[in-house]
Image (cartoon, rainbow, N blue to C red; front, side, top):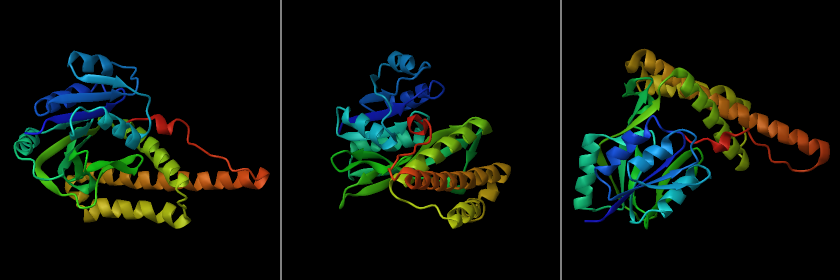
Length: 274
């Protein structure tokens, strides 16, 4: 039976971190938490629960999670965000995998709680995530803030029964703040990769996102909450491309004035941890 390291990154997650850790302690041989110098009780709660606690200034979602994996004792990794927890069914599935590890990675469904409501439709479900893996065969990648585990060529994976439970937000205001922050991070990453923001993207990407979530992904079956989630997803797309367009316009203006390439950043966006 392979030993299992659970890894978590956190920043000001005192509302959720205990629930996350306790669910991991039912399946993992160690729990490693990398805290980005939280100003609330996150670090204190981790110490009370006896996890291996490290502190590291936030490096970016992909980089911070990769750093956390590097601190694990064992090669078999289970990674959760601090505002997530394993359902009982998922914990049972993980224990079964430990008894018979047959693949290089395992994929989970993630069930999101939006303002007190579990969302079974829109793009919030099944929201599949690869979170259980052999670090010799997979590693963190993707583009901030949309990090993901990338399996090496030839690697095998399997879907597991159960859910990752994710408390997305408690209030509309909280989700609006996350939408603003994440759109800024995404715009900056896209800008640095040379992605362009045409008027077409600014106008039609949000419309498509709303239609895709509310109609194709059956958001209407979640009623008012499905409508709200679809609107927020559309808003995220609009803000991302509007901010990206502004970055290109500001940079073009700076080039025109003095010919010197400048890096433009959206204030403080890259320091946020979800």
